[in-house]
Image 1 (cartoon, rainbow, N blue to C red):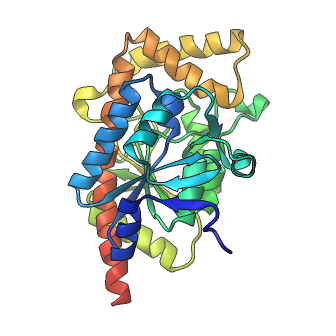
Image 2 (cartoon, helix red, strand yellow):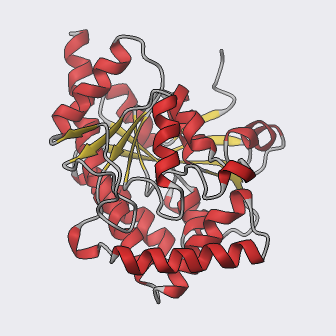
Amino acid sequence: MDLTSYLEFSREVEEARQSGQAIVALESTIISHGMPYPQNVQMAREVEDIIREKGAVPATIAILNGKIKIGLSDEELEYLGQAKDVIKASRRDLPYILASKKDGATTVAATMICAELAGIAVFVTGGIGGVHRGAETTMDISADLEELSMTNVAVVCAGAKSILDIGLTMEYLETKGVPVLGFGTAKLPAFYTRSSEFDVNYKVDTPEETAGVLKAKWDIGLNGGVVIANPIPEEHAMDEAEITAMIENALKEAEEQHIKGKDSTPFLLGKVKELTEGKSLTANIALVKHNAEVGAEIAVHYAAQTQQQTV
């Protein structure tokens, strides 16, 4: 399979590939659809810098002019942060965007696909998608979950977004055989809050231990991803009762306005930001940065462990 006509690596990422340096994938939907300008671009640059400081190379992924870009230039980040007609790209959208030479910002699912194509094992994001509330009648389930069941990429996140049905999300992941590891926690974090009522499958305490789990999984041929749930830092965590009330309010408004499918998450996050007077945006940025620190450390250990095996 010749991927050269689809994949384009930045110089920094290509050099890391040649030297065996750890690389961390980053999504682009958070830039184009998840945060307002200019905070989105500033956040993207700061997250990339955090990953470099930890000894890994950041690879922000997006589709520009029909090319899957693995690593973006400063100008490309700036473009994504302001462009109005970038398609929010999940698995189903990739073929059309590539064939028609359009621009796409990758969701968790699409970033996982592109990362695997590029040979990148660790991906850092804010929170994964999941089973939406009321999915038993709407069947509104994020493609992220299905992707986690079959694509060999570890996703470092602050758990499942609290706008979701977290219990059903965990059930779905269990059915698909996706391990959910709590980084330093036995409880699943819920994005804005450090914990929820749900247990993770296993608690891991160090990047080295976490990398070992990834290596063991893929060494024995168990395809699919791993969720590494990393709680938001204490000082940025929001009050659980307060955020739950605001989410309920936002969900009610989304239902009244008939907002569904892939439009629902940006709407709900925007509404929560409005209701929290911007505190949720600050929390979102803080948790992504924290995930970048942990993800880069895991990637460095995973690269070292896999290189040891080939020596």
